[in-house]
Image (tube, rainbow, N blue to C red):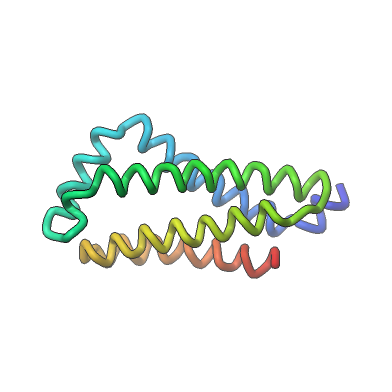
Length: 131
């Protein structure tokens, strides 16, 4: 219980990131075709249009890996106070969100970029808190 209380802010942020990335990853798996189709149209006018399936696969792997690291990070914080996996998951979340932000900026979807920025602020704050 002491570790839980000591790391309550980090655990809460990890839960937020876990929900965010796990849901997004599962959505990509369940509706791969729909996501691919929407993204091909979204990036049609950019240099990314022709490599959407590759980029979607990379983002999917990063999102699922980040979610798994969040689960491990929560467990490690609660049971041992070990911070490595929490730091790793928050850093991976930042990297993934930066990749998504780059895509939104390339597609000139500034409202989408703004939304990603909100998630990025939470991830960076988590990284600051845990380290």
